[in-house]
Length: 183
Image (cartoon, rainbow, N blue to C red; front, top):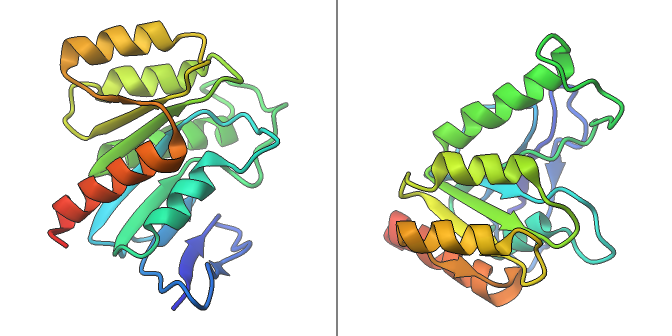
């Protein structure tokens, strides 16, 4: 069984496969697709979008939880153009922001990762919006410039701050999803 990968309304790359050896039940919906959810629980992958030389953190996490009957919302857009005007009246930008807002609110679990490459202002916004929701898992790289802010707010709200995607974040997200699914 493969991963159901729904990337965009244009239909680009509709289905992808993790591997024949890894059974997958997960559905991946990327912005701006409004496809119907098939998973029993939903996860939104908020956080740093800046590319690095290493593996994309969302791919690492997704492949680690793909064996669960879930739907993962990935805000990374294959057709994103950095020249787009960030303006309420610019349709593609508005579509992206509304998609993220709607899917964040729909998600049963919100994972936010702060990487060291950027201040990630939108990720900080998402962190603030969902810090009191009871559905937020926070991972913050040790070299993230605003880590102190994340640690103080998290401490005040009783949130655990994880240090690494491999291990810490993967383990916590898997544990929380299994608990939610009663697996």
